[in-house]
Length: 176
Image 1 (tube, helix red, strand yellow):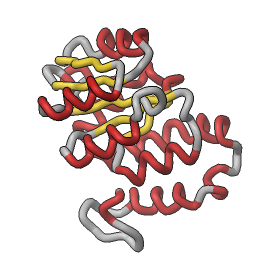
Image 2: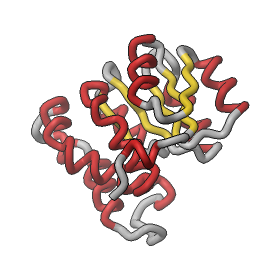
Image 3: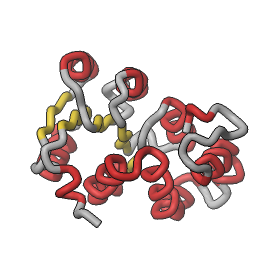
């Protein structure tokens, strides 16, 4: 298996966050990539209209991340949501339904390279599958032990993750 650094080498990435220290961290962590940084919605929009990205990393709060996610998905840019303040089951569900490739808590930013490499090598399903496997307990701690049963979308999404690529599910198969 290739190391994350090799998988990501020379990838063109857009990082959008209103916190300069987060943008600095992402730039340092992804030094093997070409990283464009945007600290606000208008700058991010301009970048997305001007360039093609291998991956887009979006904060939710402060930069209108969900609107940017919709645009990134339309442009077929695999997009990872990276958030702290919007760490809620509702934000997780919205990110899934809008087509995010993954949803990484800022508390777990040390895993950024590995999850981005998963997005590249395993696609959306693989990245979400790993997220639920590795961070299920983390989400349980954040959202409450019964969060999966309280939020039906999680069970539906996990079922869809088990389906082979291209096989329709009982719901909207394009949302997986």
